[in-house]
Every structure is written in structure tokens, then in C-alpha cells.
Length: 487
Image 1 (cartoon, rainbow, N blue to C red):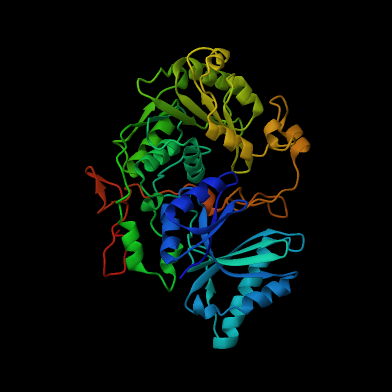
Image 2: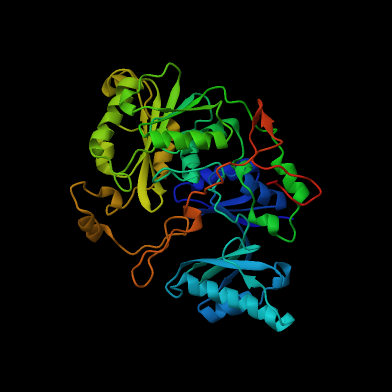
């Protein structure tokens, strides 16, 4: 039986996510803003959580309705037969995302949904299920766009960017979903060596290797929210989890370099936790010492923007990057994700593709640089192709950023001048940025989805699923006893 599903993602990755869903075999795919809706069966729901690299979470809508007041939201939610999803012994939580002039406070909407559910149980049974903010049995999501409301079951639980292999993180780590989306945008699938000369905690090399070997990102997760649903089919999910028929060998190699020894140590731990030490080399090296690789390669990197990480000479760093691309990466292609126009200008090279992407709340760009031996004009006069047809089509589809975008900040402006010039009211999804400040102006703590997960010092043992003598799966499923992994 098919039903509707919604996969949420970052703005700019919608087309990549839709392509992933097409390859999974989803039906009725429709692209929206920071989301893709589609239909499928229970197996598709499980595979979506387990296999999608660019989804933040997967929702299963329960009800669509229109409401012009909080009371109408209450009545619509109370009209649902909640015994299909909950019991008095079930814990639940409600998350809400609101874009509306009528409904201004997302928490108030969440309270109305909670009250409607609790009141229905009280009236029918004299008792009520309990609220649990952390790790509830059922996670509900209410989305309101003006007067259009969608109430959904959250089948993922923790944000899907939390793969499970990250042991520690450096300052300002790149989100795993964004990293995978960037790599998929490049078109690289393992046909050449992969290099990140400023790898930080190793996210890009790890995600690249998982893509090249076609290893599902969900293999490292401890659990998904749908495993606590009443209709959970353990046998079906076990079949999906243990199916490695689509995996392949990585015939090349991935390299991660950094000039911070602490970052190199952290990246090495994360690579080891992912079981990819034979495919990825992490080394201490400054990019200014980088030399022309012997094999065909691609560089994908996310240098500092001068926001959370502030090098002493930001423009000097980007000028060095451009010089290394030009002189030490000839006849290869490089992709750079950055934030400031001045930084791209400092690279000093003409890009063949510009893709707008959000990194958290920052409106960034991903730019492609095709390196050639000889001058740009000489290459063009020889008739050699600089911009592919795919690049042209992608550029035509991407709308340009607004003139007032934060990307235009001048480096000579103070933070106060910049905020006064560019700050304007704007709403974001929970996955896009930390929560807004409390009414008294004190900043709230980050959501759990935005913090890197930490693990016990002794790590986790993996079992069962081996390739080339290496354990890749972090949990072992013991059939018959209802436990999926052992302590």
C-alpha cells in the first residue's frame, strides 16, 4: 500500500535529493522548498531513511488541513483517531515549523497539538500518554505555511545528518548532508582520486568514499524512529540493512590534508570509526606545500569563510588556493564552497559553474574551477571545452541571489556595520540554524540535531557485514531477541 512521504533537506539540494529518490524507485516525486514529496510503501520509507544521503529527515503525513486559528488546529488534531499511533503507555513529542502571519509562535502550535492528543485520551480512557522531549516513542511534526497545515509522523528521529561515524569534530564542521550533496553535484562517483586539502574533521573524504563504494549512510546509525512504531516490520528492515549487493569497490583513493594537527587526529579517528582506513589517507600538510598529484584527481574543499574560523590573512589564504590550483592541479577540476565574494575574487580564476547553497544560515556558493595547461584565452581559441553542457544547464536553472544577500559583505566592515546593513527578519527551519533567542535576549542552546555526537572512549564494535576483512557496520542484529545491537 502506497502512502505520501516528505523528505526534508537544505535549500539548494532539492534536485539532488529528487535524483536520489528516483534511483530508489520512489513515485510521484515533487520538488518543493527544502523538501521533496513522493509516494511509496513501507519498504520505501525504510530505504529512504537508510539510503538517502541528502535528506535531513523523512516524514509520513497523517493529515492535511486548513486552519485560521489555534482552536481550529486543536479541533482538527483532536478529530484524528490517535489510538492508531499511540497508547497510554506511549511517550511522544511534538515539533512544529511555522511560516504564517496568523500563527507566530511555533511552540504555541506544538502545545495545541499536544493538548488535543492528551484531551482525546483523557476523555476516552481517563488516562493520558506522557510527553518526553528526549528520545520519545513517537515524534510528531506540525508544519504550517500560512493556513495550510500538515501533521506528520517523523520516521527518522535524530537528524539523518548524524550518520554515527563522527567521533569528534573540529570547530565549524561541515554538515554531512551538505557534504554528500556537494559531492553528488560534482558528478564524481569514484572515477578518480578525491582530495580535500583542508579536510577538518574529514567529512568530505568520508562521504566521498561512502558514495564511491555505494555504502548506505544509515549503516552507522544506532536506530531510527520508525523502529519504535507499532507496525514496525523488523524482518523487512533487517533485509534492507543486510543487503550489500549494490556495493562496489573503490578503485582509486581519497586524501584529506590539514595544517592543524588536532584536526588531523580527529579526522583519523572518524575515518577509523567509519571502517575506511584502507580507502582514505589523512595527513598533516599545509596546502601551500601541495604538489601536482600523479593520478587524475578532483579537489572538493570548504575553506574558512572568516565567520567562525578567522585566519589572520583570509584573502591571502584564498590567493594561495588559486595559485595552487593553477600551478599544482593542472588538467584537473576543483570545487570550492565559500561565502564571501572577496574570497572568490582572491582565488583569481574564472569558474565554470556557480551553484547557490546554504551552509546553515549562510548563503554560500559552490564554484567549479576547470584547470588547464595554458592561458584561459588560449584554451578557448583552441576550441577546448571549458564549460560542459551539464554545467550550462545547471547554471540556467539556478536563480541568482538577491543583491542584498549577506554574501556581499565587505571585509573592511565591522560586524555591527554589517548587521545594521543586511539584517532583516527571516524564518528558517530547525535544521537550518540554532533556535532564536529567548525573549530576554539570551541565546538558546543549539538543538541536538546541530551538535556533533560524542561516543564512549572505547568506541563501538561492529559485526557481521565485512568487506576485505574490515568491519563496516557498527551494530549486530541478533534475531529472535528483539535487540539490534549489543553493548
